[in-house]
Length: 118
Ligand code: FES
Image 1: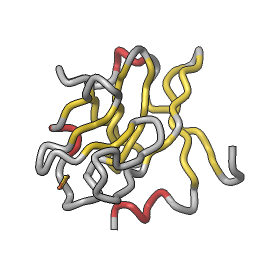
Image 2: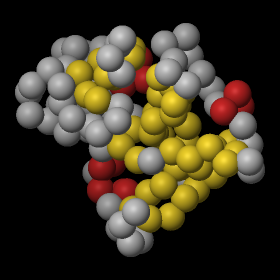
Image 3: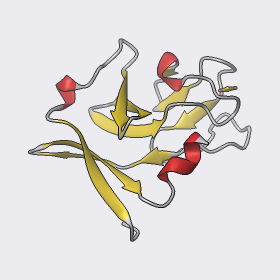
Image 4: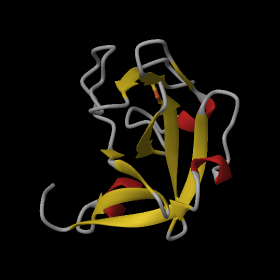
């Protein structure tokens, strides 16, 4: 884990997140929106908006390979590493999720987090 990453609690339990039928929940951390995706019983945190043209990723879906698919132009991003697996050369900001006894935590680089919202 790189220096400067700290974990922030999102919920006491994954069931408390606001899951939509597509397996994506929108969560707020310090007033900013992020997405949590569930795939094969694992949880992934990623940016609320698509890096291509700002599509709302929470309105997309997670495909059978563990990519989130943007609803606007259908670009795909790996939940695991943010890679733009449909090949357009973008990169999806994402963060580690830890399930602990006390709840669901998301790790963020304190220096870089806010930049993605600008
Ligand atoms: S805005 Fe997401 S693919 Fe274009």
